[in-house]
Length: 70
Length: 456
Image 1 (cartoon, one colour):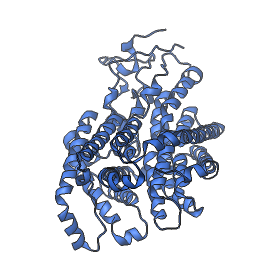
Image 2 (cartoon, chains in turn brown, red):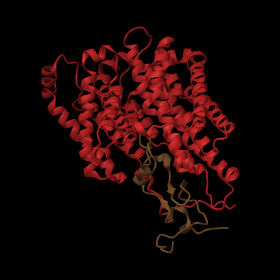
Image 3 (cartoon, chains in turn blue, orange):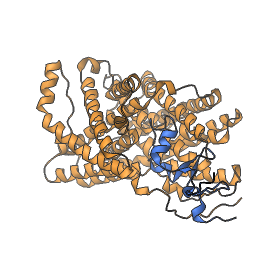
Image 4 (cartoon, chains in turn purple, green):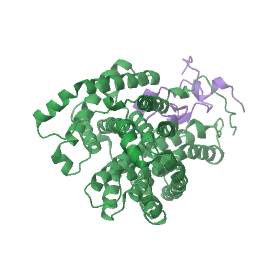
């Protein structure tokens, strides 16, 4: 199955890509780490799965940003 | 399962606005400014101002008062450079600037305490003072949000490492680099497999096992962050691996130098051992400084430069460069073997995307200084280049590390450093033991002669 680029995690309503919000969501991450580092790549926090995921992933729980039905 | 063909997305962050590139920009600006000043017969000495040993408050106040114009120049320069970085990163610039002023005052206070002779006599290094001062402030009072905005330990440590490149001779990097890479690679692979194997034996979730293994074998929390997305780790996995890595890193700051002293390890092997066995860059550098404090007491052989160079070669050149590769390998493992789930994406290009770019700045800084240095021998270097170019950059580097350690201390919440689970602890501890033993054998036995002879 193929998904279009606009249905990947990076554009999903569940996906937190704001780096400040990621740091706030993971206790102690900033002591000697940073969500602003190159090593973080395009990763974000999926609120649906409570997982760190690359923005290029996709899944069946995809939810558009403007989706207010759930 | 379908693996999505990777394609650049508009939602991906601009890779040029990462902390690494900001550190490269700030660090290289300072190095290039120093090189240009040197070529013009000038020096960045005006920026390399730190409290000197003082005998009483009146003495200290007179000293700081006399240097006030230099402190003002230093503060204005760093405030502009780091606030510009904050803007690039999307932080709130006014909050950051206000917090950074406080951070700078705390760093100067730290260095003043460190320059007090009674403190120097007990070899209490300024970085440890910075850590303790930050911890006391961060845990005793509720820090305002605007101060927290400036507590970017990684930004400062990466800038410090770029500046460190200016004091690491380029020929040394070329000559010692391969040995450092071999040593670091052996330690990384064996430690990774040990932690991962023990964790899986203890039935720890394989994603958490991968995070613990990366944190213990590559470069601490940065590796945890790099691998978290690659293996689709749960948020709690990242928390557990982070706390475990931070706790062990802090323990190693004291343990490694004390063991090195107990076994009379000379500076070069000690630096290589710390580089092979510490988990993160910042704590590793603190351990090096603690060892160098002991070195100055006169019972150990070698020079502080040798400790720093050997540490940097093994840790930065040898181990940090592994991050992207580990992330790519684990990503393929996760996508093709562990989670045969629809929609997971992976590709080899992440080895570059996750590569810690500040290492490029570190190498570039060494090249800039090599290009600037036109002296024919060591004596000429020590007489001309050292005081006018590398010593001022060395002073700025120490200041960056001090910023970093105040930030680290102030970010630690002792109440949140709760036990993380016996299995994760045991798995990581097994890696610590392997790391220590293997690192010692390679640094102090196999490559001993090599690291002892490390020199400009």
